[in-house]
Length: 149
Image 1 (cartoon, rainbow, N blue to C red):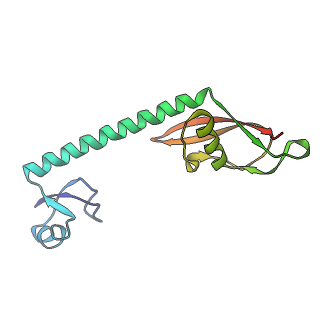
Image 2: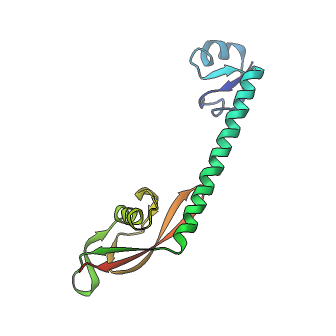
């Protein structure tokens, strides 16, 4: 019996996939638990439409990520922090502070979890921070850490 999976089923396939299973397995397990629906013409068309919509949404999200990466290219975000002698900071500048500064100064919202800091920033100066924007799109955020007056 051909069925369309509504959820990932171990050993059978992923959500939205058309699979051929035994009649008993479909009738007694997949259909009652709503893990699958019979592969009627109407359900197959619905599956194809959902797949199209999902691909269009992915394309839009990827385009948005690329646009954000382009915006980041020429921008420098300034962060003022308390510092001691020799430009050493009291504490560190974290991804959260960089994310908040980007939103406040340039109106670009990037989640702190998407900013990749190799190690916390502990000194004044200029830094390049990678931002993983999804869909294998990586932007670079320029950060200038200055001493608070």
